Image 1 (cartoon, rainbow, N blue to C red):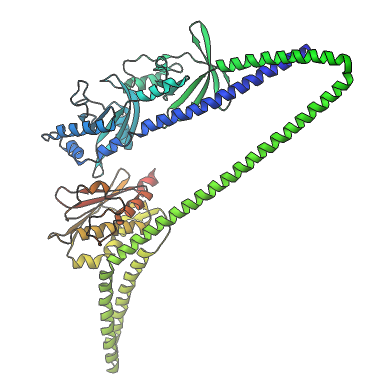
Image 2 (tube, rainbow, N blue to C red; image 1 turned 180 degrees about the horizontal axis):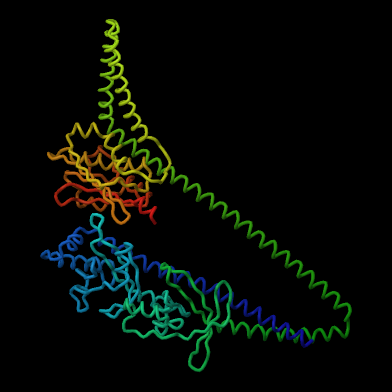
Length: 599
């Protein structure tokens, strides 16, 4: 009897603790989702700012000519206005050596202007990878913040870095009312965000020498002593959670530790839920179980005196039947839930596949529509190209009949040879049109840039000759190949060349420049014209659908939008800019196949 009572109390203890942990886990998981959402929202609000700054031509001008009079002050004022509108901490621009040329806090005591920030990882990552993200304490202001950075490019060359510092104090303030302890830990185990200030800038364990050296080199937590928290793991719980303890004064306080991924892959969002509710539940459950056992024991003694045998039989049968019914009910409920979840999942998968198919068909339709629009624009030139050999064919065939009548077979053979050459020429023209107009699925592979541009020039040869457009080509010594779809790349190039010809329609000097360069595993194809250029108010939106610089009725404004989408499918980029000497410049940047093979 005593063993049974001890076993029942032990089971009650274990079950209550398990239930308490599950409740604490479910509650903590929900809170973690809210905390993660608020952190992601706070970070995502500002990641566009460096990109906005990098698009400004005045920024490029400052980086190219830092000593230009008045340009630095103008950029300081502009950065201050953008920073105030976005409500970020500091917005600034650095050159390739890490020297700050302009900053939104230029008129403050802790101004960044003139500072050398080349030691910061976000600056180095932006130069190497194009973007950077970093959390640390400002060496000038002493205030912590999160940094976004983006490389500033001009004509395919990195000439500087735009960076923004964002304060996350409001996130900590929002977390402080949650009751539990929410922490964000970096890759080195340092707590840099906490709902309770006394947990901030502590470490989960002893700091490794390599990690300490990296932190010191980057001055990530300048002026702060990183001391261990003293957390000790006691036991695992459920679903990757664990029970930890920490000395709190003279007592030992326990927590349930839950972790959640964050927008930054090297961070961890951790929630420490107070374990005391589980202890209360265990005590109450054990006490209730003890009382219940005592009551059952007394009842058993009473009934045992009167109907020992009958009661034992009925109690066993009733308990078995109840357990059987409960088991069947739970199995039925679980089965129904699983069936419903499986059906819902099947419907969602089918809807997603249907949506993807519709989007893919719409995109292919837009690409084909763009081809047809270009072919429509080239119709007059193509007709002229075909009419000339057709007229020659008719003349040669008429001459051949007359020559046959006069038995001049030698001259007839010459005419037939000329007719064969003309038909080959017409076949070549129609073959190029057929290949260009063909609707084919996207197939990425090695594509020769020289061959693609040659096909484009052949398609537009008549218009180039008729409009007296001079072509200037700049090629590397050897042909380069890019990872693309040949047919769609030619479509993009035809769109850019046709747009350039349309832009030069009213100009006296008509010069089309095509430049191909390869550097650091990337190939850039630049198409430049001597037209009037792109209006400044349209330049930021030039790749949006239905935005066009042509006269009403001359175009729908879809060519550049489709072209930009095609280049993005190739993993590249399409950019537009106005040339200082006049005219527009469109630059395609794609991955070099040679560099990919070497890698």
